[in-house]
Length: 240
Image (cartoon, rainbow, N blue to C red; front, side, top):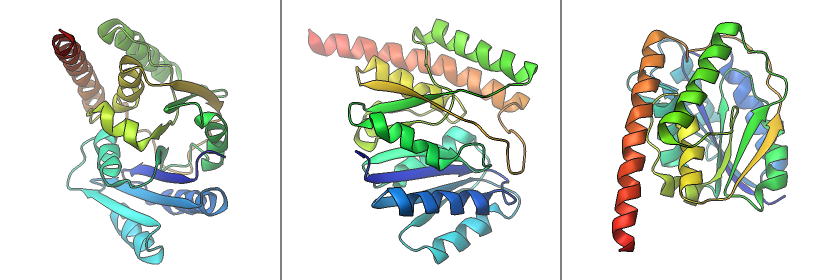
């Protein structure tokens, strides 16, 4: 396996019911399959007992679990960026704190990672409610139209930390998970895609479909278009 050094970043917002089991599963995976691993849990300003659980896990697993605490709820992307900022391993991946993704599915990513800088994923078994499906398809179509690149991704991803740092992704909403492959393609990095399964949540509910989060995502999408255009013009100027 080409992935022997891995940071798992887990964003959590009000996940006290599911987080302990998800963290235990991730730690079990790291112990069995990753010689040099760490679990970073980023609390996105939770109002329940999530922050306290993270602190207890960090004390119980020194050097293996690290906590990041955002002062206020800022969005999935903001929490992930907080985790990325303290990641120390060669590769970085993300997992939800609700149990929908099994860390053992990362073995499929490991199998193709040697020839990739970024491995994205598509779900082979997900059935979206109609409203969520329309929202998801609409966002992806609009993203392709606005930025000119289609992000072929649904689930988690595995990325070299050195590449992640060069991408300069900055979205604070769910859009971050589309921005990373979009930027990787724009910069010419090697992108592979695998299929994985999605599971029922252990507890909790989706936080990505509130009106405020949807509005934040679309505002950031147009900011991304502006940023990519500025970067393109700057790169053209350097080549002259």
